[in-house]
Length: 128
Image 1 (tube, rainbow, N blue to C red):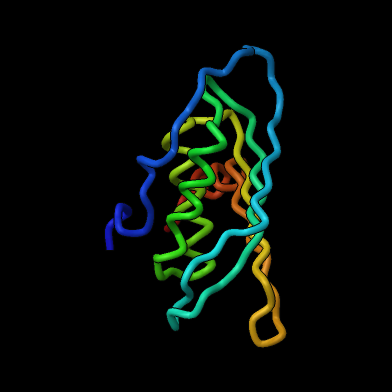
Image 2: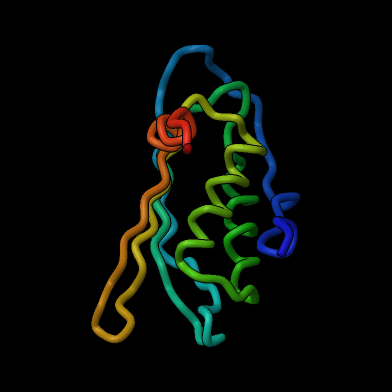
């Protein structure tokens, strides 16, 4: 399945970064809803830590972007990678870390983390 079927990154809008200085923006959305593999609703808190490059996230568009997941069927693992890839592509930050805290399902909760620093290290490791 291609990337465009997992999300609509065109919903993400940006603003010009007002500073050339290094800083970090922390965002939290405690109400992300999506459809799990069995087409049952899943709920998660998404934490975003972003050190911006030339662009920053326009928060209203981020809200609409997350709202769009309500009708999409995807796993926790797919969700974090789709969000990570979309934010990296649209905003091109200096650093990005996303944490997704999923509500318990069957008594088990999950937390997933994607970090541009560790992903870069993993990309640098040659696979034989």
